[in-house]
Structure formats: structure tokens, C-alpha cells
Image (cartoon, rainbow, N blue to C red):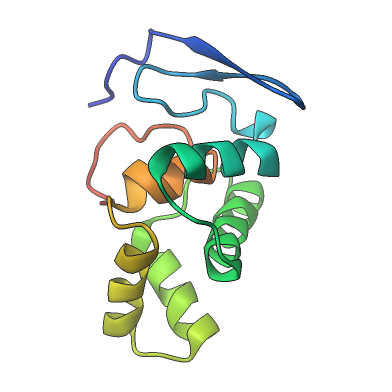
Length: 121
């Protein structure tokens, strides 16, 4: 269940204003920008590396292609292939990159809407 989806807060960035729901998720993924990602990463305490950006860009590409947020298992598969490691190691790597979870950090930074259920992480 989504938390406070009706509580909308504007976030003013140099590139424009984006709206966040009560859970801190963007309400319109089309308004996402690298500036937004950098802001959210800083807020989440995530120092963005090239690997973080690879995950974010993969998630954005999936959203653009499929119109829905990509499930964590596909991000793990992406990381395994990208880093040439086992899926179990890629799972650990995902949670090293985003230690407070796929939904809380990776999805927020990537500009995904808050999922209706938290089953993805």
C-alpha cells in the first residue's frame, strides 16, 4: 500500500520543479533529470559512482521501453551481466550500492513512482 500518495510536495531544482508524494517519490517520472537523481542520492546518503549511474540508466531505459518500473530481479540480472558476476553476487552488489533497499533508494533516485506494494525490496 502506498504511503501518503495524496500529500504532494514541490521540489524546486535549477532545471524546474518536480512534485514528490508523501513517501518522497516523484509523481511524474517524465520530469526526472540527472539533477533530480543527484539531489535524491545526496538526500539518501548515496555517493553516485559510474556503477550507480549504470543501474539508474538501466532502470530509466526499462521505464521508457516498457512503461513500468523494472523489478529488482531484472536489475540483479543486469548487474550480473554488466559486472560479469554470479546473480547471487549481483544481488549483494545491488544492496551494497543501495544499502537501504531497492525501492527506498534505487527507485527514488531513478525517478520511479512509489510502488503500490513493497515486494520489490
